[in-house]
Image (cartoon, rainbow, N blue to C red):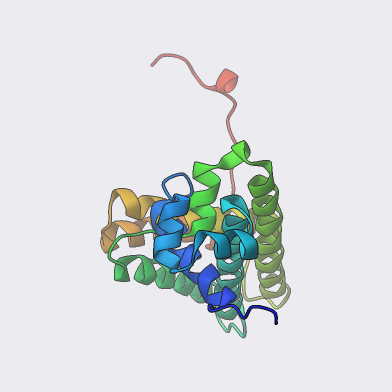
Length: 210
């Protein structure tokens, strides 16, 4: 008779996601995973493959949850600026509610692994494109309905806001203070206040001396 697995695969992936989010990829060993997940090494390898394969499953799981959270925040908005501000505040609340500001696994993977693991880099690039498309649709609809004015293309604003949202996690790891995080969010949100955008000044065009 086929052997019945004594664990829930989805629950194991969820637990692995949290462990990778707390410790990072490099600091998490197979021994750590076995101890934390409560599965044998043979079960882990036969079901999920190696550490890289389990990490990709955990990253995909985290990304789906993250995407869904952002999607819920952007649905049925009366005031788009208030909606986006709420997304930042919700993220700050989440960071402050944790014992340590572990933040986003997608951000941690990008910073820790970057281009050293092409499979991770490709996944994160595609995921960022999905988020930009989601945010751009929200911004475009708000502009078309006259509820928002942008001085830059919606995809550029979307990418700026999303990267700033992820940066909250990085800032929280250095300075876990609500006031500092909210001040950062206010500066970011000024991109939605209709202020005229100015072109970047090239170094060669900058005045030299007093």
